[in-house]
Image (cartoon, rainbow, N blue to C red; front, side, top):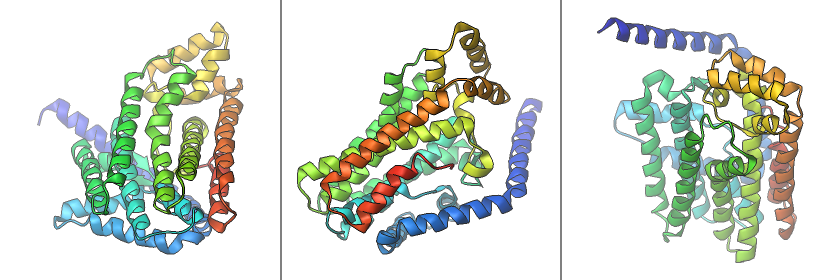
Length: 360
């Protein structure tokens, strides 16, 4: 092994050791936070508790492998999965639209596989070290197993979707996944583009995040047998909810705390990905502020996050971003008006409020 290679390996091990120490130091607080979140979500998801459990059983059964290392990687995914929002949306929408069929838990497992695959690949792209208070697959085992695990999740998702009587779900999920990939590629393409405007930003997040939440709700409604107008309303609910959720994620990447969110933060800044707060700052700031902010972003130093925050804190970027998130959350809630009142509709309404009030 060359000296250069040894240095790279030593540095990687040092970084991993640091993150493991951080993880250990904040374990108690993180555990409390995780347990609190789990209790809150268990209460929120009560109307679909049995079906959500069934979808998780299907998830685990579909991904089972006879190879111990593959199974170990799959089991590690349990640490990466967080709020189970996407499978919950399939089930809650179906419940709110009149009732669940045997297809709903299968579809819930499928969209969770798709979402988990995107997380694994995102961590590779962002070189993230921590997600959900656990070491990421790429940090622990390297990029190659991480990319292959993401592919494994994608292929199993479509294999499972193909087990349904119709190919409709495969087509819809395939189209949504294509858009997710397009959104991610567009975001990579625009790294370092400090002239990115709001229209381009919203097009990216509609594709990379909102299209998957939209198809979750479309599937849930369609398989409940409601009219197409209701299916479209639920799709609109999911899309606006996803946009609000992503704006909140982008805000937390700047203002959040790793011990609360449980994942690596500041990766957007380090990768020079312009998100709504920075776009707002550049739109409104004078040159005396915009110029040093551009310099800080171009240098891409992890320590610059604190200095960038000081510029953002003196602007209306945070307030403006939350306002835009709340606008889309309100639009999502308006799409629920076509549904009769039920416990599932109440949860969908609560999720509209949750996405713009969360801290993780």
